[in-house]
Image 1: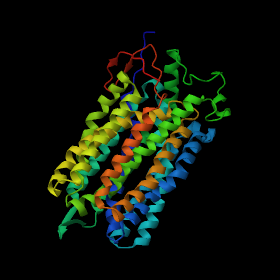
Image 2: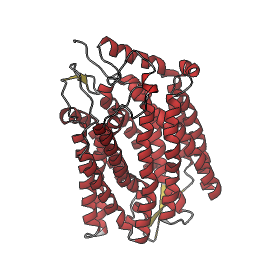
Image 3: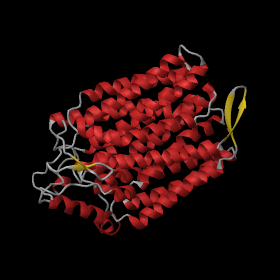
Image 4: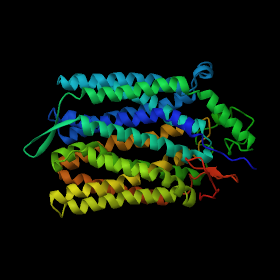
Length: 461
């Protein structure tokens, strides 16, 4: 077999534009919404509850939207694809309601801000799962980690752009040693909405979903590779939809899937607690701007994406994810020790090495965790598995803003850091026992995201 599977980087970038804008949206929402709510004198627990509302919606809607896009009517699918209609509608509506949320905050209309936010979050749910499922749809299983690397790099770039915009466009004033954001924020919110709309237009005209899927299948066929290696009858096009979604998994695979999803839940409990409350923690407790540590984290993530993909090929996805979780543990442990034993000035400085470790670790985890979760899926159930993955993400993101906020309110504001440390350590324990989720690498070589051939390795699992 002389031909090799190659990642089409240009195509991956195109289908990743949706994730690019999703990351921009969540970066500005997670950073500014807690501060918007703090302007109405809400406690951290109540802020955590409001910030969990999007994940309560996501818990119900993300698996449903994944299933709906999997089963999108064939008549419409043959013309528009099964993911693109959700992406175009959801992103457009979310961008418009983001502007309304900012208007309501500026006018100090809490009821309107919360109502608009609720609609906005429903619209985000409309296209989040289909957007994430699109990359596996058009990318062979054997090179999805490389594809996911490109997608995550795009997400990181989107996050960095948003943080830079906030760094230069947000205005602060200090009152009694505490920083407050002042101004109406129209420029930055409008720019984020424009990015979302522009990416949607590009995808609408450039992404040919059905064509991309057909070309993937033709490539696999020419190499003698089956898309669904576990199917008993590959000639039966309806086989995957007729069997139960999890019925084809043996006991060991089911246990591994449960452990993977449990690990996802636990590290999101750690990470999302920090991302939700860090803007308030930074400005109100440490007295520093929140954007610079987050920029450092994104820079570390950007640097780690490609190495994490290559390391995954060498030592397996599971072991690479364990390294990433270990980096989270080290980062949060370092900050936890200092915040209870050093001066506030030392803690301010410590935020930078902490976020280098956290950002790099988070990138190392995310290159592989999603593709591990969908590795056991078939082409007909990728949307369901994607929805399942985000169900566990959403469960964590429902619980952790409230629980971490309560820790900050009723135990100590500094408790945010040991809270993240504990859940990172638990995630390491559950991931340690995973036995499946690595791609079965074929005899042919694979390529990394630079397009250069890499020698094939046999991954564990």
